Length: 107
Image (cartoon, rainbow, N blue to C red; front, side):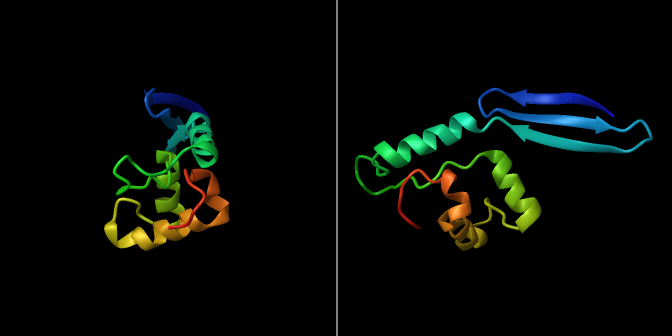
């Protein structure tokens, strides 16, 4: 199997790969370096006020792009679709995804 890097965005850590098996089959693979973002989330959970200065906006999560793609592909949840907001909220309230949260509350 051969793989070729199609692109890498250093700002997001997102990489796109082209894979070929030598028999005419191919696939695209995405990967992302998420540790720095998850470390920021953990720090925010422990030490930051989630509200802005005017106290009218609350940051509840930082979600890596690769997780947004996983939710779409595996769970059918489209983060960018306003009609799916209740599904996104449910995922962020689920203990399995707690590492995406930047506060200790629920939505």
